[in-house]
Amino acid sequence: MGTAGHDCESTASDAQQGLTIARHRLATRLTHWAWAGALFFLVLSGLQIFNAHPALYVGQQSGFAFDNSVLSIGPVRERSGDVRGVTTVLGLSFDTTGVLGVSGPEEERAYRAFPAWLTVPSYQDLATGRVVHFFFAWIFAAVYAVWLVGSTVNGHLRRDILPDLADIRALPATFVAHLRFRFEHDGRYNSLQKLSYGIVLLVFFPLMIATGLTMSPGMNAGWPWLVHLFGGRQTARTIHFVVMLLLGGFFAVHIAMVFAAGPINEMRSMITGRYRVRRSAGRGERT
Image (cartoon, rainbow, N blue to C red; front, side, top):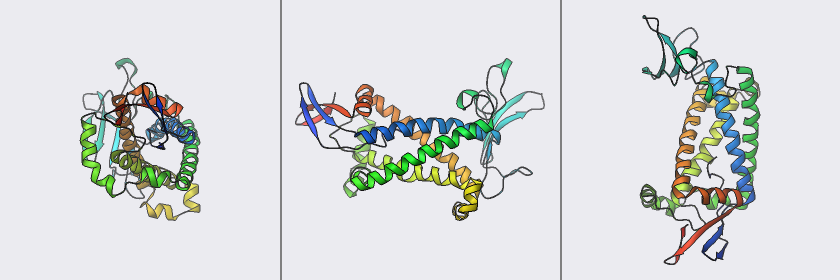
């Protein structure tokens, strides 16, 4: 997802109107698009699965006979007979009619947590949602395993993902530069990219895989320590959902940065591996 799979090499060649750098290897581009496609279907099928029981809990128990949820989304019928969508987070309730809980036009109201356009399949079908989710989950995990091993062996992980002391010191200045929409590419990750990609690749992705395995009854039998590690299957489900939201936020910011930095050039680099910059005052700047 995002440009989390970048491999920033220093090789470059002069061009008539600028400098073209080799920014992404083929393996990097393939894993990037594989993750993007897998995550798309994982999120939409995951919301389909969530709709089957639209509430999250902490611990081992889910509140079928009592209310111990930390998040719930669904329709609520008022005394007047009207039905509205209500989202409750840590005891605080919000009217989300038209988006969550109750959605669709007045004549065709859908009483479900997430609306049809956000789920795969669009209609309520838990079985199909689970098949789609598990299929792309294994693809996602396999691609991640290949990326992790390859990046460790070729040095990409150490060189481009893990921030060092100099990167940490440069974070404030880099953050301010991004707020001012000033982007410079010299064939390397800046400190903000290293930090964000490092969190996504080394924290969020492993958490998604581990919590997903924890929710599997088969894995519970083979690896019961996973359940204890996350404090129960319901806690694992909640963490899984929260990380999904965080990845969604990362994706939104990443897309915004792509458009701010020049969408054609950014997309070209992730498709062909080549990125065009221009020379100015002895340094490369984007075209």
